[in-house]
Image (cartoon, rainbow, N blue to C red; front, side, top):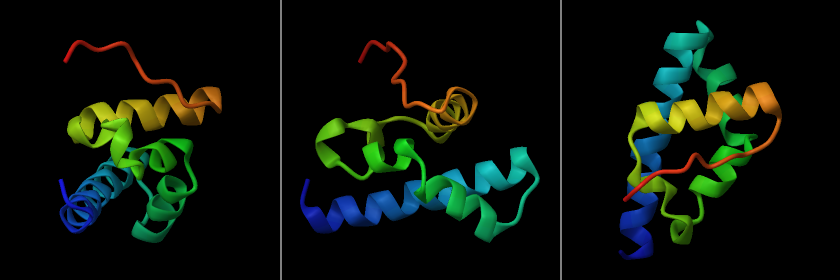
Length: 80
């Protein structure tokens, strides 16, 4: 995948995750965006080679929420 396509995909995923965070945490757009972009989950998502971008918004939200609870990034075991 080209860097341009990945950037577009990352933008779409980010928007979807921000919406999910807003919905579940009942917070505004700016706070949800700030929480996400400061997270280790987002840092890992930004790296194309990690393949985290392949997962659903619900899955990514669970990874993000787990990070909020444990204060560390943990990738759940999955079978691809």
